[in-house]
Amino acid sequence: VLQLEPQQNLLVGSRVRGNGLSGGQRKRVNVGIELAASPTVLFLDEPTSGLDSTSSLILVQQLRRMAQLGMTIVMVIHQPRYSLFTLLDDVLLLGKGGKAVYIGPTKDAKKYFENLGIMMPPDENPADWMMDVLSGQVDPQYSRIPKSDLPAKLFEA
Image (cartoon, rainbow, N blue to C red):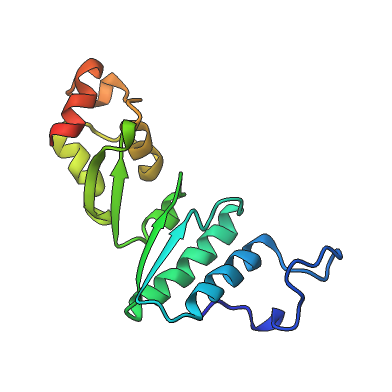
């Protein structure tokens, strides 16, 4: 599942150039160590932190496969690229102060904000746009909510 078979005989933590594991492979080894305990729920704190976008996507694709096999996976991810964001079944989006703004299916998150009166500009990355909305960075041209009312509106819904 973690696609580490070609690296099975490499020394983890090796500093010898060309003989060690990449950052993405090390992250997958850490996930594998957690999986060895056969947990029913896997909690991961920023598993993509420090990885390039391709390695992050590969790791989340592998976690998605495990979820499809029945494992519950809960993880914290900051600033995911959109292709990674769409792999998540459900999301909890937090606003300032760690307050929950949206919890539900990932596919419905954009519509949730649009129903509040905040429209996504054309050619915008939906994941980035949602992060901007959560931080109060909304272009007034695309919002029916005055910027000063935005925090209250996000937390009342």
